[in-house]
Figure 1 (cartoon, each protein chain N blue to C red):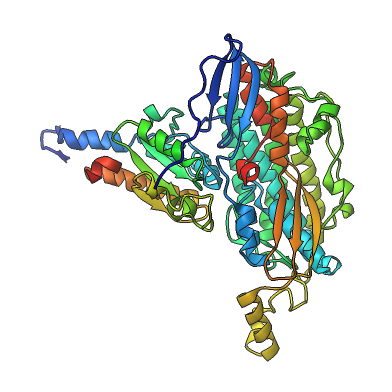
Figure 2 (figure 1 turned 45 degrees about the vertical axis):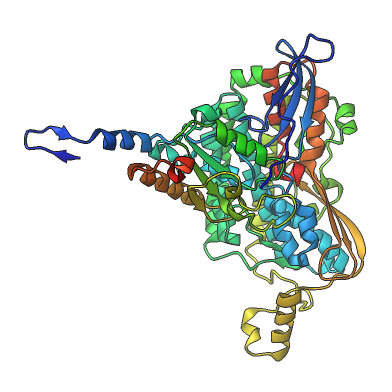
Length: 406
Length: 159
């Protein structure tokens, strides 16, 4: 095959003849993915930083248009691969709105959705904690954080059948009830989590080296953060308490008590602390959801036009067989219209603008990826800082490139 | 290798060299997509790739023996992957991790290279989306086996 030429060779001398233009990435251990940054540097100081994205462009939105509504969810979950279930949840909520079945989702399905979404948030923040520590040279934090993530992934695997992309959320509910033995495992994790968080905080939060590297690095004021359209922990670290779970509650989040952790400093350390506090808040939500989960109930909507009927009825009922065949062979149809649905992903406001032309495939699935908007701010906060601090700033914005490039 | 009655350890130099080489396969730090997270997970305590001597992820291709193509290769990234492979010193090995790297996976579209073996030679393919860390460990095991059997990896094996 032929390979198209990419501008990989940087200019050595810049416009004014003093600064040097340096290419950082796309293969670089601390860019958290395939990000290239064209840096104009004066000695060790960054003059301008121009992020160059698109090295992971996958055409997910285009591919989704060629798949059934339920199949499209498979590719959509591969966008933000640290929190696949947040993507899945947002997409199914949007499709449910278009179908007009939002208020008929069984309560147990909604509780399980909240449970999985919060577990995903913890897993995602664990990856960020581990890799953010490695950027600063704190390797041991990685082992603790990934060990904790492993516990969360075990639960996700038990429920959905896969470690990373379980595809557990479905239009109309979730794919099957929680398996036996899941709740005791969940109880174990909930009992263990506070202790593990204390360990992590002791290792990282109180670490003077980490504080030296992150305090007063990459400061964003509240106005700047809003101007750059930041959302999620990066915005809350600048003092704006915007959380989609509070502002536009979905899946029954308004039933649970939790705080929105904020800081006012707006530096990398504040973003770090906000994420740690978010794990504690997720734990609070999980404990409340856990109480609800003892009550059994259906986990899928009782509507054979959207969800396939239960397997055991197929051998007994002709209608069930026909509905099952229709759902499997040609999917379901969604009335024409468009909808914007957003959820609070681990990185911020994750949104989908979904357009239907009445067919069994989406006409358009446009994503609002929080990582892309958060990454933009790098251009604003990098100038004037040292190259070594650039690594900290990228890490503190926590971009995921599957989502940035899509 | 065999132990003689006089307690001398006799071995062919080739075998010793291959044993040493196979237990110090250093991968290149090159994360592409979802699989990169599972690639990081193999270094975590639960899986601990250090048991195989491959925990030393090198950021420079000059110091790496093994390229793990961890995820989908976009058309824009393909020249970069090719260049990194060319920069690695022989002998070198390639693991194609996951469905996307091996065949394009579910992304049969304009943006994704339909299999990284169209641009670089691949020694071991790992199925899965993403493969479990155990799958990647097994792939490293297979690479070690190839080295012990005298394999030279990649282009050298094919020449």
